Image (cartoon, rainbow, N blue to C red; front, side, top):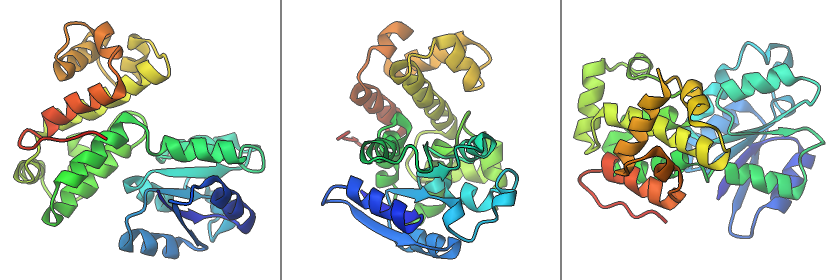
Length: 262
């Protein structure tokens, strides 16, 4: 993994101790340095402590624009354990995991948090889709990354179009030109991937997963999972390994290529 961190010196040392010799680590000290680094390098994840940089903590509950810009790269954030409201704000801004300052930053907990940026079904699917896109489809890649990594229910097509200069029609055309499945299939796949992880990794009941992700009914989610997997029942879908599920989704998303899931 290639980790970039906007943290204090002590936290930087702990993160380095949690990494393997094959991982790379870069520490920055200001927001503009972080975004400059992300623009120039292919980082796997960001570890962030807003209190360690030029961030106005008094606005942490309402002014998270700099943090929300990190959605194209999965990120873990340190929060003050006495400020749970800020923790929820960071989750809504897209944090993959939360570390409590000076409480949950042991080597094992840091390793688990970094793994969480890599191991979700959404992240695995996104990684393969981005690998299949050429450089000329950079705008589509950026939108898909934000879409798959947004917290809670994935963004709608209209919301994605509003964040660019593209109309919805142009966005559909750009996705088609990139050799991907129709955008509607991508929308359903992102939601289904999140549901699969909720049900399989967190033992979330089908009805609760459907409600969390904005489905109109549990039956609608069940139909999406069955269509993607080709299996007759949602119980059989939930019994798939992550490798099998991701492979099934990639066959839908990349109809013109053979994706190998590692």
